[in-house]
Image 1: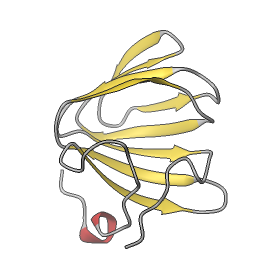
Image 2: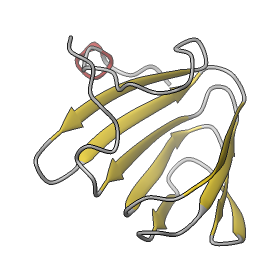
Image 3: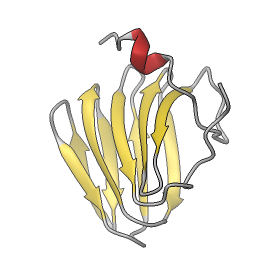
Image 4: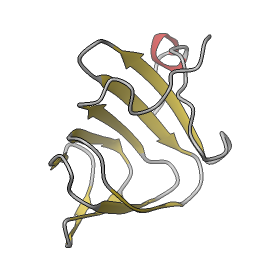
Length: 112
């Protein structure tokens, strides 16, 4: 799936992962943060928690564990991570997800 330039030209977020592994495009408001994650290499996200997060898989596959329950999500499937729930993921290269975070400052948005 190729995203249109008006999406890929959005600012990136500051992640502790290399840009050759995960590429991002973000929109921030006072009420939340929307991020499109493009996974360029297989990627494992260690267990962590934060405020609520909702996401949907646009392409590829995400194996997501939320509060001990593991499911595989494919295109068109959505997930809802409650505030404070520990979660982790394995995401395959080629996956694109859109996540919306309750916390507008979950990640810093880089200046374009």
